[in-house]
Length: 304
Image (cartoon, rainbow, N blue to C red; front, side, top):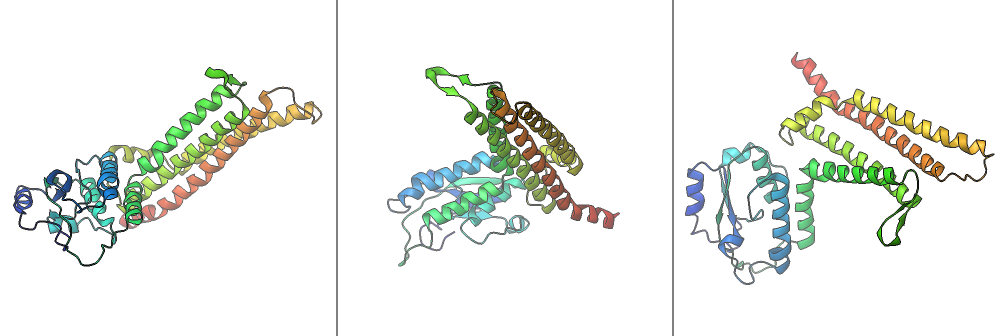
């Protein structure tokens, strides 16, 4: 615990009992035990700690109610095996997250917090250290950082582009969605696919480095997504994109390279360029995945 006289070290029986009962990590919960007036800044008490603890529970399915309590007990051998890396305030989050990911038994007991007895201001910086905690939580969860935003953007963009491909769409209140909204939908698709490829690459890197433990879904992903498959899909997107773009150029040439009356042609151009962009993304992402796999293949050869 913090050596600033803010925690009650005479009330550690509950921690010891949980450790003797088989827990690997026992967390204190200041919100359950009681926070004295002036012991925690307003932003930390009502915004920072609750929000970051909620994100941690959401991302990692941990029941811990106070991610950043400085009073905690643990089995030294269990925590050493985690090989924790961070050196700043986010170390508190890393210990909880890595313990949960590695299947350690994490429990929680109420504890109290009172104003610290230091004669100098604390080293904690609200926004800087809050960002470091949030950044850590995001980097340890490619699903929430990349996959979920990617799927949301990609599907929304696809539906929007599909609805507007053949012309404007009138919705309630006299609002009309036209070419600009179609372009936005295509950009959303591009961004969504890019985020998904980032998610695949980061999950693969996390698997080969041991940063994250393997799961059923991650194993399936790593076995079925590889350079060849990404390059094949890239070729399909490139061929379709060139085909759409070529069709639009043919229609334009048929009109003597003048104004085009058909409203669908600009959409065909945008769709063609979108597919070409997606093809290039998938092509180079596939080879980047292949580069990441080189050390793994070398190790297999050495071990064989």
